[in-house]
Amino acid sequence: MAPKSADANGVLFESDAATPDLALGSAPIMQADKQPRRLVWRNIIAFAYLHLAAIYGGYLFLFHAKWQTDIFAYILYVMSGLGITAGAHRLWAHKSYKAKWPLRLILVIFNTLAFQDSAIDWARDHRMHHKYSETDADPHNATRGFFFSHIGWLLVRKHPELKRKGQGLDLSDLYADPILRFQKKYYLLLMPIACFILPTVIPVYYWGESWVTSFFVAALFRYAFILNVTWLVNSAAHKWGDKPYDKHIQPAENISVSIFALGEGFHNYHHTFPWDYKTAELGNNRLNFTTNFINLFAKIGWAYDLKTVSDEIVRNRVKRTGDGSHHLWGWGDKD
Ligand code: ST9
Ligand code: ZN
Ligand code: ZN
Image (cartoon, rainbow, N blue to C red; front, side, top):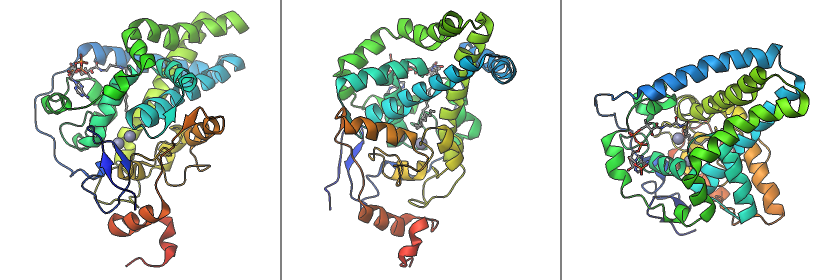
């Protein structure tokens, strides 16, 4: 059996299903402190505007925009989605595979298009989310309710416990990458260009879309849509679905979320085995676009050292802590 090991962030690389204390997803479910919420009005106003604008953008997307603009918005959704799933999440937060610099460059461009803050900051929050899952030190602690874990956590100051415990996080691997340092340093310049300006200008310039439709569809509607899909992993996939791998944690297998989140809704598996680059047990062709994307780059050698989990380890874990919903209970030894 592979030796167990976790780095200073608690990010696991090898598997030993017999040690649930090290499996990041197995943190005990704890109630959040009742601390006074310190509202951040700048974010409340910005997100309120974004969502109102996105409703208008959605209307234009359905009834008004040129077909090229709609397809363009869809392509941007997939590109920015991959910047989060294959980039910020699987590569940078979890180190579940390695990537050569051309792929890292592509992913950082996609990631900037997604405007979910720099990949370093995203990965920092996400490492906290796994290491202190569903406690006060988890940025989007799902025990504080659907709204908080979906968007509420971005509208208030972070919990002091998160800031305190976060000091111990090792981010040296992320700061060692010049591409990530560059993105963080110039984020406030690069992000508006990638997320808002180019998506607005391209449809106007290349196929004569109107400025208004272009801005509301390809920039605001597309951005708000992908934000909500991402947040659903924190809210819906921490609330609804089966728990075939670990019934003691809130994260669940949510297929509806996975479809929109390019394969990131198999959240019970992911919190149980966070180092698996597939973020799902059967990742290759089952609603897991991101896994196919990484596999494609693995074929040309730009993605390598893909980490995964053996069938035996999954099976043992399913038997030990699963809720009985695993489709392979046909193995026949449920008790
Ligand atoms: C957005 C992010 O939407 C969404 C992430 C979702 C994650 C989902 C994960 C699910 C799994 C993956 C599935 C992907 C599916 C994708 C599908 C795609 C199709 N550790 O933050 P500050 C310390 S972003 C250690 O300002 P405040 C640190 O000292 C949307 N330390 O806290 C820091 O200083 P510095 C766009 C930490 O003041 C200091 O605290 N962006 C940590 O309480 C202050 O940090 C926005 O809207 C930590 N983790 O403010 C901006 N965190 O940074 C939103 C903090 O200098 N954010 N410290 O080192 C904000 O405005 C603010 O962060 C705040 C809190 C108001 C929320
Ligand atoms: Zn989670
Ligand atoms: Zn994760």
